[in-house]
Every structure is written in C-alpha cells, then in structure tokens.
Length: 100
Image (cartoon, rainbow, N blue to C red):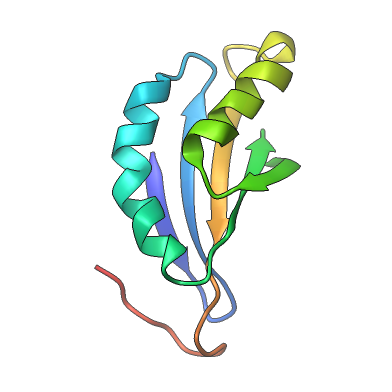
C-alpha cells in the first residue's frame, strides 16, 4: 500500500508490505513517488518493521528492499509488516499543502 499523509507538522510518503513482497512491483509502483519527493528535499528512506524504526538508507527503494532482504527477512514471520517511509520537508509548518 502506498500512502501520502500530511498533518500540520509532518508530511510523509509510506509504502507498506508483508514478508512475501514482490521487489519489482514495489520499485515500479513507487518510482514516480520517489522522483516527486526527491524534488522536495527528501534524501533518505526510513525502514520500519512492525512500526518500529530499523534503519535509514539512501533515497533508493531498491537499496532499501535489499537491506530488508539481507537483514530482516530471515527473522520475520508471514504477519510481519514492513514499511518504507520518506519524510518530506514541509515548506511551512502549521499549514496543509495538497499534492496531486
């Protein structure tokens, strides 16, 4: 699932998926989003396992998925939820901006 979420204080883009993820599908579906957010001062992806932060990596979905595969898959279960989250710098805090 791909979600762009905004509050008065935060703006982020998040991709969530389970253990049996398809790397190529995630890369192709998220590519336009990554290109878009990279223009908005985003420079890294945070990796989460079951909503707990694991590590920050460069703004590259393939590298992030490779890190999950190499470090987290063996110890995860079928119910484990992974997410990649990109924090986006808000031009001005305390306001909402609508993105298409």
